[in-house]
Amino acid sequence: MSTPHHTAAHHEEENYLTHDSSIQSWLLTKDHKRIALLYFLSVTLFFTIGGLFASLVRIELLTPAGDFMSSEMYNQAFTSHGVMMIFFFLIPAVPAVLGNFLMPLMIGAKDLALPRINLASWYIFIIGASLAVFAVLTGGLDTGWTLYPPYSSAYSQSRVTIAVAGVFIAGFASILTGVNFIATVHRMRAPGLTWFRLPLFVWAHYATSLVMVLGTPVVAITLFLLGLERTLGFGFFDPAKGGDPVLFQHLFWFYSHPAVYIMILPAMGVISEIISTFSRQKLFGYSFVAMSSLAIAILGFLVWGHHMFTTSQSAYTGILFSALTFLVAIPSAIKAFNWTATLYKGSVSWETPMLFAFGFMGLFLIGGLTGLFLATMGMDIHLQDTYFVVAHFHYVMVGGGVMGYMGGIHFWWPKITGKMYSNFWSKLSALLIFAGFNFTFFPQFVLGFMGMPRRYHSYPEEWQILNVMSTAGASILAIGYVLPAIYLTYSLFRGQKAPANPWGATGLEWQTSSPPPPHNFHETPTVTTEAYDYQSLPLSATPEKGASHV
Image (cartoon, rainbow, N blue to C red; front, top):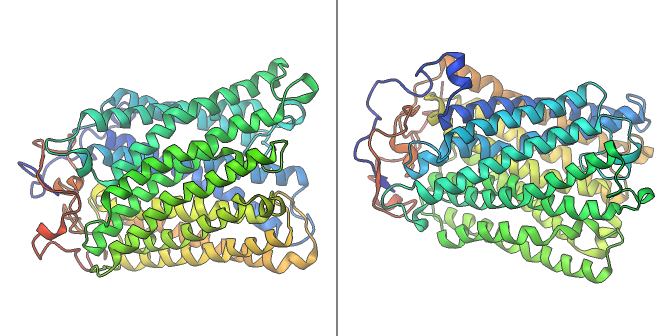
């Protein structure tokens, strides 16, 4: 893709990890790479907390009777799982971790445009997340992650106000990150890096940033109004006070459906990079894939009403939202077909990141297709608030977002840390996650179609076998997630030293040392070729077979 004037690949020198490694230097850093690692540690913690609550839910559902937790505790368990996973892992994971680390490297910049704002966003995120964790651990939250009034504003005795304040504050971290990414892409691209030479990872994060900046203020205001209603007695959403609970749903989903794309669009950018690299092909239909990211971001703001087919929303409005929902599937399909076309006749290398990419494609395909069931008004009336919705949501969010995140972590881990990880254990982890995920959530499609409501902690005995299968799959899935924590940590201390470009990729981030120096490049690189121009690479520039062995 490009040739920098000078690379640091062969220089033994101080990198961003070893440069002034005191705790104070990390907590006050303005280096985008260190801030990305601070986010990485934070979201990993919240993922662990959310996973523990998910384990409680699956243990409860092993038996038909609600005999492990009371209904109140069960409400708190699934609510805490949802809040931790959605607001404090899925939304920030790929943008704040991989986007923060890679965006400047991919466009040949020394840092993000607003480094102080970048650090401030992490502190704001930690303050908001800490409030939410405090609420969860000191009294719980039992409203469901959607926080629907009037229960959340007038009746719940749990820590709703503190949790809402935490989510409200954390939203500002998303806004600041989005503004930072937009400014960086517009103002700090390397010479020769035109818009249609940008990596698709950058296009995906640019589109995501538009959603962050335009959508997050809406949900922040909505939660602020909910807090006012709960604490001061205003009547925005409570019918007993003259409010309208459906108004809350309109405002909440106006953000929260585009927020699905905050979680999934960056992961799609990751998959584009991985598929191009490990098929040794320029991504088929590059401009269409780039524009599809913007199309998803725009159309995502027009479909919120498909969450409300069973409310007082009119049938005619529902028909419009149903049609728009089918329309938003088109740009996602463009990506899937173009990834498939890229693989066609490609020289595919079955490295660990590629396994996660294939897992993403399979799971996201199921999630997307089942979304069309829910976009059909007649079918949605039957499936609304059943485990079919739970399964669909997890196939999109976990099967898509988390698989993309895991693929990105494994793809750029050598660049981030300068170390290679175990080839065997990482491939085993990818396979366990894929198998465990399907074993966990596919039975829930059947449960939902049979009529099992979500958020119930007891159910008829005839549904037990499917719930046992789901819990068994969750156990396999947990092992798949624990393994990377072990072998990636091990690689930091005993892993083989990573070359500058272990995968033979074309992006600018691979033209500097692993790990990068504090200011990324010794001299600003100049871009002279199109993105993913593997044809111009020497034949020797291929992924290093077995390089990921410890």
